[in-house]
Amino acid sequence: MNMRRRKFLQATGLGAGSLLLPSLLWKKGVKAGPVPGAPPRIVFCFAEHGVVRDNWKMHRGNPDSGRWDYDLNAVPDAEFSEALAPLAPFKDNLTVIDGLSIATGIGDPYGDGHAKGWNAALTGAIARETIEDVKSNASKPSLDQVIGKALRAQDPLLTDLVTQEFGIYQYNFHALLFGEPSPGAPVVRLPHLEQPKGAYDRMFPNGDGTAPPDPVRVAQPDVLAQVSGMYDRIQGRLSSDDRRKLEQHRDLVRDMEARLRRLAGLTCGQPPAIKDYYWGQVPHWQRWVDHTKSFWDLTTVALSCGMSRVVTMQWGQVPVEEVGGTGDLHEAYAHRSDPSHSTDPNYALAKTVMTNYTKKYYGFVGQLATTLRDIVEDNGTLLDNTMIVILSDIANGNHDHEPWPVVIVGGKNHLNTGRYYHMEKETLTTTTASYVNDNTKIGYPHSHVLVALQNAMGVDTNFVGQPSIQPKKQSAPAIDLTGPLPGLLR
Image (cartoon, rainbow, N blue to C red; front, side, top):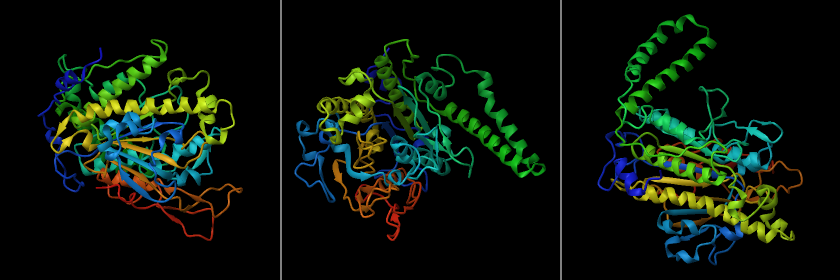
């Protein structure tokens, strides 16, 4: 059964007047917000195919070129673009960034257009290889994992639940999330959970709290602690390769121990009710909507009671019937929504369908933002301390990687929100394509947004993935990818 918001908040102990658990108090060495007490969180939402730019952008008389910004609070809700309209209620806590390019994706020789964007969107780096003709494997870990690793180094109370990876797919094709299986090892594609019950069981291993704790589970951390101490006594007798394998296993054991102790100490209230369906049990769209709602409820608990700081949600293609189309959304509408197909008789319909597509996803984000806005924290609300970042693999239906749109809902305690930023197109192209002129300009590199998000989460490194990239024009200096997007951080 779906839970109404007030009932949900009461059940989880998150109603007005409640405070965060002591484990959420700010730790020394981590950048704090304006008022200590509530740490920053981040949710990455990823939906493919980009946007229909004509129905997304909001230039309001400003030029299509150059660097400028304006106050979104001065824009009446009714004057928001069709695509951005679902997010108008959050305009004081909304950030729209226009005019970016995925410079590392444009310069990536591996995989197809979708893979370049999937790969570079959160890694900020060129891939290391093509696989299966059109896919690619990353060379660097994705930002969600980088942040999670850094936060765990800063706060020993955090466990591997610091990051949560969710997804709802029509099919699982390219990869967005990458991590290191061990220090220095090549990064690998990370799995995500597509069934809410899997996430529920991971977060609440003792079920909903109505049954007595399992005595074996209660004793397990102490057993694991004893086993962990055996490793040090046998390391000296092993080869370097076996020692590395043993260290990996030891770290896994310690992770399990830390998680069990951490979960045993949390008092998050009654876990939320969830809906969990397998393919064919219910109509596809019902599964899509109910699973998103369940994942959002789990996200709210994980962020608010100290389990997690980083969540990723990967969506596949919304069922085409839900956005006014029929047949193959990718071929019939996504491609044909780009101005390069303006002579196609289906161009107008394709623009409408793909605009509806974007609105569906922005509506899902609005649902999460509404719930987070209702939860009071020391220095505002949970939404004020959570950045919900909406990304895509490409900018538009033509598989371009510029102008690449980024929308951030929330995070006003860490970002200068309530603004529409437009960046200049003055970066030399990074493409490897022989037919592109060396002096062609692309948008401002998206890596600077990744750095800003990383810094807002308390990680002070000044680059994500790679610190620079060489433009196509070999005589030109390398393009600097370090530092945050100007003006974005508070």
